[in-house]
Length: 305
Ligand SMILES: Cc1cc2nc3c(=O)[nH]c(=O)nc-3n(C[C@H](O)[C@H](O)[C@H](O)COP(=O)(O)O)c2cc1C
Image (cartoon, rainbow, N blue to C red; front, side, top):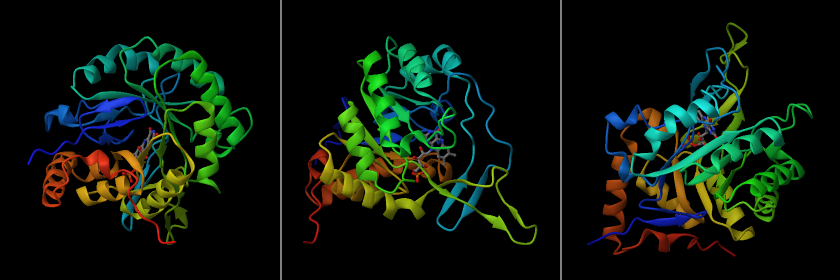
């Protein structure tokens, strides 16, 4: 049976619903040695900032029950070096190029979006989890007004699809998703990592040098699924689901809950070929159920009344 894995999400048509999550796949270069990247829907670049960043001091990763904490701190070469050295590689992988940008002010996001708008990229993913340097430690993505301001300002300078990647570290994810849709985002990406901590009681020290880090992996899947399902009831723009996806069943859970496409993060760190196995298993699972088009599953979850 021929299985159609193609989907459309947030203004991007993709051969597969599988995107590689920002920060877990670099710019695809290291992974190119393992398999043909054209089987993927797309690659989300490592989060880029206006200037290069070395990131936080080590240790900056710690394993936890069913997951991991990271405090990489946006280590990246900066937007200009990305455009010169990494984008040409990403363009020839045969899958879609999603550029993830992280700013500490509205001006940061606008400056990067302006540079990207005439480039051959498929979408801009806004990582809205950074603290605003001007207003103190408040995350841009946990304040609906700042989130709106950033998305509107980026919308004003580019026609590229805008994907708003939301932080789950908020009281109401629906409020943020509605604000993102109203401000002109083409899709919401749910979720970034959950703030967490690991400690060593003997040394009385946090394990991460940054003290806290972002929790990812299977531990966060139930939280991410709940957020996808909740937001699906509230907004009309597509949702891209991410959080703890390890296998094909996980992908289908997210799609049924409301995701049009998904991202695979920590699974890439466990096995670089995770996406190859998931792609194969998706075809098998759908074939067994006589489902020929994966896109028909989106949002078919029937909640109990
Ligand atoms: C080591 C690491 C680095 C990450 N870096 C970024 C980043 O630069 N920008 C971003 O938006 N998300 C980043 N993330 C978050 C992931 O893209 C993803 O949203 C999160 O890990 C949840 O998915 P998962 O459980 O499948 O890993 C990073 C995650 C990890 C584990």
